[in-house]
Every structure is written in C-alpha cells, then in structure tokens.
Length: 318
Length: 305
Image (cartoon, rainbow over all chains, first blue to last red; front, side, top):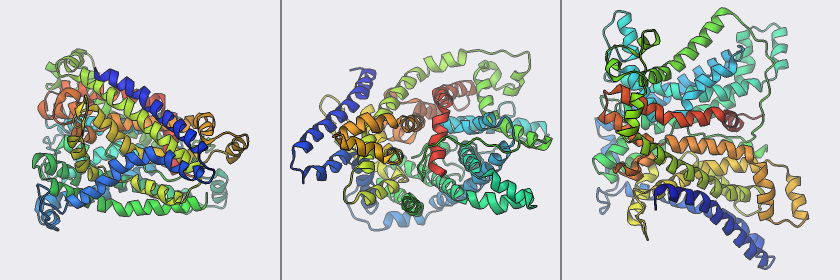
C-alpha cells in the first residue's frame, strides 16, 4: 500500500477506533453493577494514553537507567564504569562545560532581551508587526536555523553576512565556528534568535496584565520609570520570568539539532545530546550512550521537581 | 522534546488578552531600537530567501546583499534543482505523511484521558496528573535506546520490522507528545463550567455523551492551539526521525534530508538555501494563519489572568 494511503487511513482509523473503544467500554460499564462500573470507568478512559506513555516514556526511561550500568553488548554488569568513563575524559567534560555555558548564557540573554523587547514594543504602534518578526523563528526548525546561521557565519566575505561586515570594516574574515570557545557563543546566538520571541510574547502578555491604574498611581506619587519598573513591574512579572527561565534551561540542556547541523560538536563545541547521539550511532556504544542520557536526565530532574512544586501551588489556589 | 521549543507551561486559562491602554510613548531612540531589532531578526531569514533566488554562478562571487540593488538576476532554478535531483519533493511528502497522522493521533488519544482527569473522580487522580506534569520535561534522549530496540525486535504481519517505517515515528511522536497534550487539554476542559456537566448528568447523559456533545465542541480553541504545537513540533523534529527512520532515505522527512544536504553539499549555498526555505514554508504559513491560537496557547499557559 502506498504510504500516503496508509497515512490517510491512519488519520481516519485512529480516531474511529478510539471512539469505538470508548462507546464499547461505556456500553459495558453501564451494564455492570452500580458499585463496579463507575469505579473502573476512569481507568478505561485513561488506558490508551497511559499505554502510550508507559511504552514510550516510562518503561524506556527505566530501561535506559538499567542499560547504563551494563557493558557495550548489554551482557555484563559493569557498575559505574560508563559514568567513570564520562567524567574521566576531556572531550566529554567539554560537552558538559558547554551545556553549562548554554544554560547560563542562553537563559540570561533570552530572558533579558525578551523583557527589554516586550517593554519597548509595548510603546510603539506597530507592536504586532514587530512581535511577529521576532516571534517568527519559533516556527522555523532548528535544522533550517542551522543552515540560516551557517550561511551567516560563512568564511567567504562574499557569502557570509558576518564576514561581509567584517570585510567592509577593514578586518580579516573570521572563522566564527572554529575557534573555541567563541564557537559555542556563536551557536548560542542562534538559540537566542530562536527563543527570544517566545520569552517576549509571554512577557508582553504579562506586562499587559499589570493594571494601568497601579502604574499610574506610582507615577503620580513621583516614582520615575526605573523605580516603577523595579518596584512594580519586575516583582509582578517574577513568576512569569521563572516559567520562561525553566523552559529555556530545559531547551539549553537538550540542545541537539543546531549543534548537529552547524559544527557536529567539532572544535570544542560539543554538547551532551550530540555526544550521546555519536556514542550511540558512530561508536555503537549503547552502554555509554545510556549513561550520557541518564546524566542529561539527572540535570533536568531539579527543573522537573520545580515544575511539579509550582503546579501543586497553582492547583491549591484553583 | 528537542525541537525549537518545548512548551513547559504552568497555569491554565486561555483567555483573550486585555488590550493595552498604555500611553504610546514615542521618541526617536525608541523607534530606532525597535526597528533595529526587527531588522536584525529579519536579516538572517531575508539573507536565506534572497540567496535561494540567485543563480548558482553568482552566489559565491558576490554577497547576497548586492542582489538587493539593480542590476540583479533572480531565478527559480535552485528550487527546481532541489525538488528534482535532491529529492526534496518526496521528503516534503514524507514530512506530511509523518506530521498529519502524528498530530491527529496524539490529540485523539489525549482527549479522553484529559476528560477523565477533569470530570471523573478516582483515587490517585492528583498523583497521576503530577506524573504527567513530571513527564513534560523528560528528555527524549533517555528513551531512545530501549524504544529503538523495541522497534527493531517487533515484526508486524505485512509490515515487517517497525524500525525504519512511518509507523515507528507516528507511534513515537504520539507517545512523546502525549504529556503536553493531556496537560493542556485537561487544564482547559477542567476549567469549563461545572454546571454544564452537572446538568447534563442530571438529564441522564453519560460521560460519552458529555464528552462528545459538550467537552469536545467547547474545547475547539485549545485543540487548535494543540494542533499548531504538535504540527510544528513534529514537522521540525530531527532527532526522532533520525533515530527511528534509520539511514535509508526513502522515508526521510525534510529535516533529515536538509541535515544530510548540509553535510554533503556544504558549499552549494544556492541549493542549501532553497532547500531550507522549502522546509520552512509550510510551518511559516501555518504559524501566520493560526498565530492567534498559538500565542494564546503559550501565553495562556504561562501567565495567569
């Protein structure tokens, strides 16, 4: 069967099967004794989703943790050997260091710039146009972003925009993606281009939620713009900033596509996710790759707990 | 999630934004900064577009910016080349074949679970939903190896090994997209007026009727937001396709083909830029036509009130 027909079939059949499943379990549940039916109903409704989540998220996460303490072939238990390997090498530690740089630099720049832009565009008439342009990179894949920025950084000053400017100013063309540690910052710049729109849009909505009367009252009382910002705007935006920061931290920790396309981790620009991919497919070392994945997961766990805490607080006031 | 954005949003309401009645302060420096930022943000994309329309002979001889001033020649030859000889046309179809079912599947599966979380009472409801919130940020790297061996081991009648097929990516994307879909849908469906469901129940309507007749039609805005998120995520995904589709190019979507082109045709900028633009075209159209839902989707999540 041609794949396109299969796809059409899937689009029609999957919802149909799920609807049939729900109607079937409802028919059964309503015929069961009153004490049994309503008790099992929620579990039957949840079943399809939890089957998927179980097979594709929960089971494999546990299996990867187990796999990470076994050797290359997955036969012999090696304890912490794969982790010792990871923390005992310069190139893997470089990847770890770069992820730390990604987390700190990207989060700081995106949140800061997003806030500045949100405040500025709030004061111009062409606000929606300005936002749309800065927001647009969010729709563009990281692979295409990689192509776009490789083109920007190209060495030939008759191709690369950066070196075109460098040449026009009378400097030598630069190898933007070769010199360490500059290349990591050049990669982070592509992340800034991709993510600032997200921060800006969310912060802009937050700004518009602040009561104009409150700001006016402060101004009438003689506060200058900076005092209004530090005394009112910033504290009121703090929860929003926290949400954005966690999102960007996770993005920075998981960075893969841009690095894969632009440098493939060469010249000291490696990151954890790309290193894991290499270990799995280029070096066929699933044990080590599993350990790297677990390390990445461990780095995300604090953020996960923070999200859960925040969710619980919100549920409490719901 | 590895795509451009993994919305990890806390909070619930998707509400229309309040219009700002702030004084529109002017001033030349303000406009200069805002227009400058707009210029800087648009520049890389404009460079790509202009370059993709220039003849191959000129692309490496003079900067793309020279084409902005006459005399300049533009051509669609690069697009014909990448669509024909580089196989971008079949990759485009593959991207559609992957994205549309993966988007429908995740919403279909998530909707029932979201309804159960919203309007059914059962022990452990809160704890289970906290698990969903936790799963939102699980890096899919930690799932790759076991899922890949599942796909390699399983043989389906008539299909053979799942690994390398579209089925593999449909299933994987559904699994990976579910926590966010359940989360977003539950927050919306759970926020619908309680009275609606109570009176339906009094009138003798069962959960299935309440779901199909009430919850689903009332959730159109959030479903629209979810469609855009999932569409953009799957269309722009590289890692899932790279890992589960394997090296054979037959089933490769645009992202994988473009990534491979970057390695193999690194210097042929006229081809790379055209190929990149083809991969961006549909998401940009979807994004601009449904921007309203998209923005509400993310702001509604992160901002209360």
